[in-house]
Image (cartoon, rainbow, N blue to C red):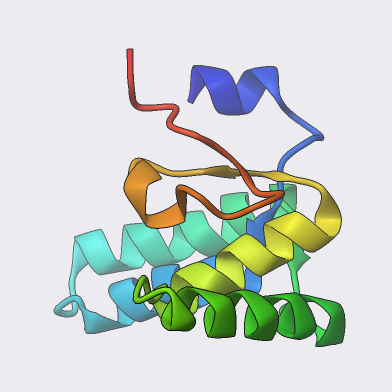
Length: 116
C-alpha cells in the first residue's frame, strides 16, 4: 500500500486484471467478505485507478509475442500476455508477485512490490 501511495497518479490497472478481480469476487460465497471486496473494487480501485483496455495495438503486440514464444516452446498464459501487452503499449511497469510469468518479455518492465 505504501508503494501504491508513493506512485499515486502513475498507476493504472489492466482491463484483464479488473476482470480477474471481479471474477474472483463473484466466485466467493455471498456474505460480508464478498460485499466488502466488491465495494472496495468499485469505490476505491475503479475510482482511483484508470482501467486500461486491451485494444487493437495491445492485441497486435500480444499476437506477435505469443507466436514467437510458442515457436520457442515457451508459451505465455493468455491473460498474462494481455496484461503485458497493455503495459507495453502504455509504457508502464507490470507490478506482480508472479515475476517469472512476465520475465523475458522484451520491452516489458516488471517489478515485485511484495519482495523486500
